[in-house]
Length: 469
Image: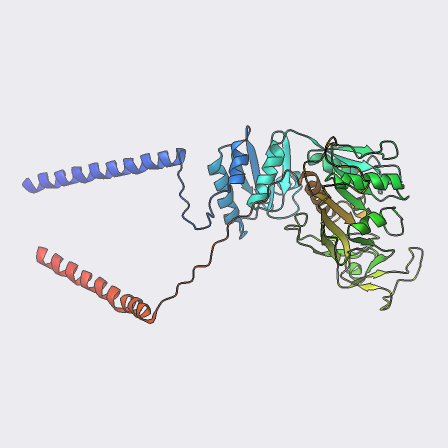
């Protein structure tokens, strides 16, 4: 009877303790779910957003939905999930979900997903698609969504340029639609009518002029660059644009040639449609791994040395199987052949990006840029020159990576003065150097002491239990 009473007492005490422990665990879990607390002990704060990102998130006054299109087995998925969890922890206005494009192809098609690892951010009635799942790209995409100001992309007219209203195969109507989807306004401007590039131009595009610009127009463009403007030039071979001398003054060389690429035949394309196989390290091409096709393109090279106030980069290059043909005419019936004496062996650059620091004292026109003249917010002018305008036409825009490359260029030029550059601190290497005596101590502790302690503990427990019987 006494033993039964003791058993019930122990059972009651154990049950009460178990229930109390379970209740405490559940309570802590509920509190942790509602009020999570994270402590980042890594040296480079790997699981903490930078102050720039925190500042952007703190200014949000609406929700941001992020759709991450990753395969379930993708190696990058866990890293990106950790990063998005960090965004979610920093701001409750950020929500995210992962979508496997292979399991949900309809959704992937709805968001026009072409590559695994694409993020689509939605908020404030707008959307942004990025292909880089890094903090800088995500924060800048959120920044673009939250901006109220609508930027304007202008297309120059008056010289037979590509028409943004033309729906034919040579028109740029698809380009106009694609730019508008990036939350920009698209307008045209004519420097023959208005002598200056509009002050509200985020970027000016000159796409395939058939006739050269007049000297006054070139002067207006130079003045625009001196004000810190952003200019995109797409200049086809065998067409004088009138911009050659201005570009030369900025270290960019245009020559009368045409790119021939024998590798294009592998893809069923013509030898005058070079494959863009290499990209320079630039924000436009950051993480860009898709081949592009430039039908009937010319070379665009950089001079050496470059002007002191200009940073130049070859942005896109053709394959090693291509060359810049100097005496070929599009009317020739025979395929061109490489000539060692005249032609330039590939890879051939077909696009150049230039960052130009304008003079503070005066511009090329002699007009003062200080008082009384409205300036752009950025102090550095950005200039990108492509040796082709066909690749963005309605016929070729959706061919491979052409659309992405063009839109990356527009986004960079139009947004670059507002975007944030984030450089995360790198983890420092911390080598462990031991003396001989320290090495011996660690060796004997690991080989002898620890096993001996475990063995002694086992013997002690065995003896203790035997005495209890």
